[in-house]
Amino acid sequence: MSVHPTIAAFTADGNCLAVGGVPIDRLAERIGSTPFFAYDRRMMTDRVSYLRSILPPEIHLHYAVKANPMPAVVQHMAGLVDGCDVASAMEMKVVLDTPTSPEHISFAGPGKTAGELAQAIAAGVTIEMESANEAQRIVEIGNRLGIRPRVALRVNPDFQIKGSGMRMGGGPQQFGVDADQVPDLLKQIVAADLEFLGFHIFAGSQNLHADILCEAQNKTVELLLDLADRSPSQVSYLNLGGGFGIPYFDKDRPLDLAPLGENIAKLIDTAIRPRLPHCRVVMEFGRYLVGEAGIYASRVIDRKVSRGRTYLVVDGGLHHQLAASGNFGQVIRRNYPMVVANKMDATDLETVTVVGCLCTPLDTLGDNVSLARADVGDMIVLFQAGAYGLTASPTAFLGHPMPAEVLV
Image 1 (cartoon, rainbow, N blue to C red):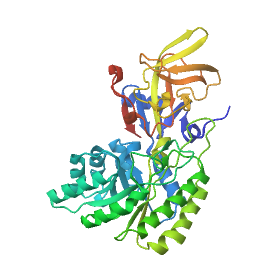
Image 2: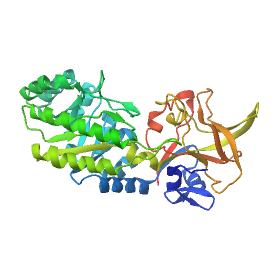
Image 3: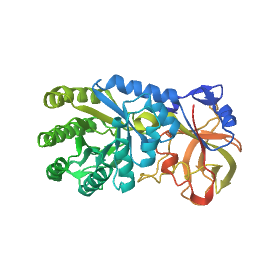
Image 4: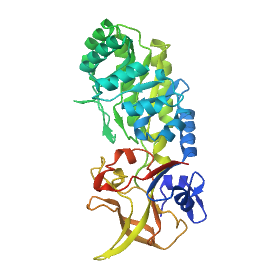
């Protein structure tokens, strides 16, 4: 049986999975309860180093905080990257508590409230505007505060990215300003004396196809340079987005970064630098940096057989790890990689269905998976849990306790 590449990336201590070098049974005792999320800081550090070795040095690497906003994770990532992208005032506050300078924080997302905009303007972060209405509110708030807001314009491109888990550009979108509306809005921005920096395009996420991503990069740079040429003021900032995916399922193959690094280097040398020699070029990554470094651990609290099918009932569930249940973006439900974490050397395998403790049939974490034979008290670990786990899940559903989170 083949081993998922993420499982292979973790070490084992005897018969136990280890996270950050700590055996899972000892980690559970240290935390004091299950379920819990654990994040391996070494794996995050290694992933950032690897990405930097592939991308050209001119790229400013940003961490997309929405992937995992745990304060300890954000603190750790802030020491590794060049800036952070946030999607709420709460995320902005977490980043402002790190050594990250406000000018290296960007705030994107539709529906920013007046209060959030005021906080961002007062902090001096870059607001990536999503509409003409938002731009007008920024002008009014800046005038009220006596502060010249730092802004960029998020562009909804006139192309779509195939193969992405979520498309966030092309066609009608709640994200960004349609490309054909940008020139007129730029004139209004300059007339209002906002500190306009440049543009941001994020067309899609969770893409595992290097050729498609290269094509998207080419189209992104072409569009941004065209808009820069038509801008009434100097462009000093281009955010090219990210979208790099990680392999969640058995048939997924890890993204080949080599052609992407080569393509970005070519675009910088032949397209961006000749026309915008002093422009700061940003790429933002969330899931790709932290997703594979996290696990979700829960303990078997019941084992039962129903009409020939064996069920393992654990003390966790979709209220903590919605994505693994298939209810966060999957059209056809597929299993995340998982193991019986205290029986890593076991050869006695069986086919089981792993379900959570919630009173709903949606609470399935693994359907017909091959695992070491597990009993009450054993620990089931789901991988690929470092991004869009706890904060992307309905934690209040049915009133169960919140899980712990640790950075190891």
